[in-house]
Image 1: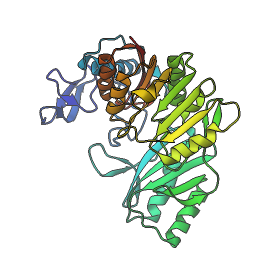
Image 2: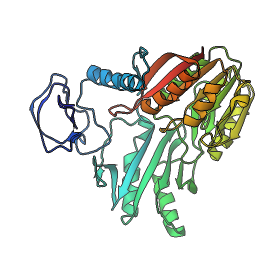
Image 3: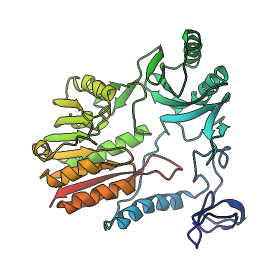
Image 4: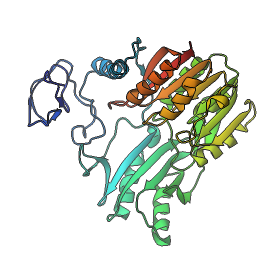
Length: 385
């Protein structure tokens, strides 16, 4: 960011730079005239051409302060004055899921601000479980040079799980060739738009020491295993000793299952496959009762009368937040609420709704599992005033 308020990609705080024509908000970096002491050598050879990482060139402590500041600024902009806890590093072994672009026989990441695909040969932010992801994606691209697709690959305990997204329109012959490529690269499963192409092993994901769950095709997961662990521990701490808990936007149940080790849980999500997976996991011995319901919480949030039995509510919505559900929670008398968010801006909006309803925001903890990107998770605790 310049003194004039222009955002300059790939600059570092304190750089003296030469920039191109701006649009009033952004300007391209043409040359670093005098580098800042906070500028470091990026760890990836693709940095600057690949658009996936944006801050590999910034010193670690400066990067942490910037990410922490993003949360603080979002809260302050919504009128929320609270001391944000220190940023928790949750990168762990690296990203366990990655979305790769496949276009014209090339597999990799999009060039920043472009639909062009940059062929990637290495990616230092991926976990060891995705060490074969780039080679598999390139083999897939070579088999379908006319296609323009994206590929979601997840590292699981039984091998990589890949889901092809886009207009595949496969036939029996193509599917057989894709299945063969999947087998050669050691995949556990290959699907297209969640429809099966090949299943060699059932993809499974551990949920701490509590359980192991079957992973539905294309299901949502936290970006890193460490991130899920950190978020879950903050959630468990936030609900305190609540004996009856609601987990809203629950996905396959990484919070619900851990909560069920000590509390009765109601869990809701609109993804039918995720709910089916959670029901199977919740039937494992040693867990307290879990009621899992498919429900669109954006159109049909839990209302005040439905919320009253719970001693704590956890909600973890998608990027757009949970405006409708927050409005209903604000009317309730639930003693404790724990919010998990991947978007500080929509979280701040929802938090303001809860506070206007009489809740007190007592803690906000930012969690960094999206290394080298602007994205940051957070966990917040509210108590009924």
